[in-house]
Length: 244
Image: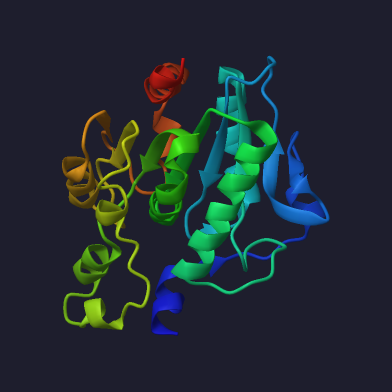
């Protein structure tokens, strides 16, 4: 209870409430696992699966679809158990297992290449879920990530034995140690929630090919407004370079 109260902030919503602005239920309204948008120009260069942060629901991340569909990507905004209209339980085992199923289903339906995008908590989910699907994955974009959740928790609660209290670990350093795919780590220069040093520690632990992007002056929740179309184009080109 202590952990879930601090880590997960789901919003509930119906499928009808989440579908807007060109987003469709994916893979279907009756078997809802997220929202999807097709690229403006077809066929799709790749499919990007977005795992969002710990608050709200997938419908709040429409901005990913708006920018990535212009770059020729099909976008799936994955939803977690217990978020949006979905039933289920919170916790790392459930979220990661569900994310693995989403990646496998996306690959079966759309083929490759697949790009995995994770934001904050979603970066931890993406790192863990990608381990068993690396052959299907072209690259990972991890935005405001941490190295290990316990390190971030200890930063915010230095007087508590949080490493003993946490049930969920989200050890991205361990999960990505042998990923063997391009990884772009994006940190916000003024992040007060996941301070920059934790994202840099993750980056330092990775093998090549890798790239670090520091968004100067950005906080944990306003980084998107500081990126332009050229940044996104270069990021996607880097992640897809090996799949051409």
